[in-house]
Image 1 (cartoon, helix red, strand yellow):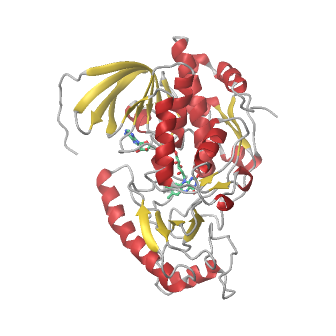
Image 2: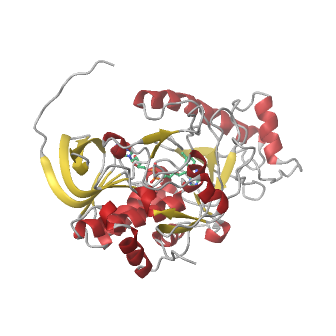
Image 3: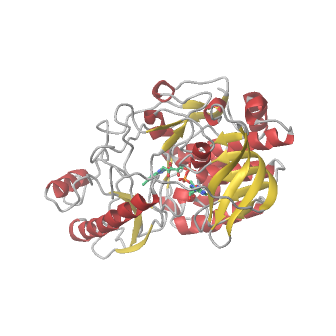
Length: 441
Ligand SMILES: Cc1cc2nc3c(=O)[nH]c(=O)nc-3n(C[C@H](O)[C@H](O)[C@H](O)COP(=O)(O)OP(=O)(O)OC[C@H]3O[C@@H](n4cnc5c(N)ncnc54)[C@H](O)[C@@H]3O)c2cc1C
């Protein structure tokens, strides 16, 4: 690709103790946690609303669990208070919490504003300000105002894509060993007008739920896929309750082999996945009892990206952590739990037959510290982990708890005029424990 050199004076708008890039489940918790520690915090978000996959991605339900006493518990309370159909709410014991993305936008916006965080919407991280290997701030592209910069003592990369870390020169891995393929992208949508007296919900390809005819729903989906009614890599049309009667969140569309780090490729995916939304909707109306009169209520306004960069850290959440339930003396999230849920990077269905079991495991502080870079923490799906471990810790409950820990660490480092690496895990653990988080058995 040809290049050109470019130079201009960029206004430095402000100085912060902590700058959080990305306002998904991890970034929101990071920003609020840091602000509650007394830090002056900026939260940068390229979309027009905060929440990441939880809101603009239309991802529902909130999955996964962590030990009690983290900000995840607070968010569950905050968001379950918004659902009207209380009977439909399955709480953390069921490890599935229905979400309403529109109500979540309202609640999460207030949650962040109440904490006193300065939020910059429609603003994209374009570059980093670096002093040798020490991050000092970010260069931002604000949609309405162009380039500006913020200086920060500690930066948290909660972009999901690990963009800040990549710009800072961190070591990056992408995809599975061998061929580097990543999990497919999906555009989720919601339907309303479902007849609850007969309509099923279905959480995935291992769900044996039956239709009123007695046929298993997953068998119907498979048959429809084989007959060409559903797209060839849509093996299951997942139908999740949202907490509102008559409504389902539909996780079905799928595209493989898209470079989700290329903005132009994102539109190619959008074209295909919006075509698939129409096909999946027609399937529901024609073949699934209770869905005859449903209508498409809304859909994600951003491509649902499951997997891109993983940033190499001082420590790594390996396959063994997740499969054997390993614990670490440097734990900052305890008893993280979710299946190893690898949507097939090379076709339909799951990569390993079905989602594989996991044991409650720890996330060590070092997995949030990019090797060789100072003044930077990661949080959320871009932390240091293996491809298979990522397929577990990427769920939103675990990302929230990581975000909180990163926010506390960043605030402590800034207040102590040190870096997150020099700070070490111990002070972060002490503060999380005093906030009520359980870190050890
Ligand atoms: C289709 C799909 C279905 C899923 N299903 C579930 C599910 O049912 N339950 C569950 O718990 N999890 C599910 N997940 C996983 C989960 O949603 C994500 O892994 C999780 O949201 C990751 O949180 P995060 O905060 O790391 O990143 P994200 O939620 O991706 O948030 C990152 C934020 O950073 C912003 N951003 C990115 N780059 C920049 C930049 N350069 N400058 C400024 N802002 C930037 C983005 O706009 C976004 O708001 C699903 C994921 C997908 C894609």
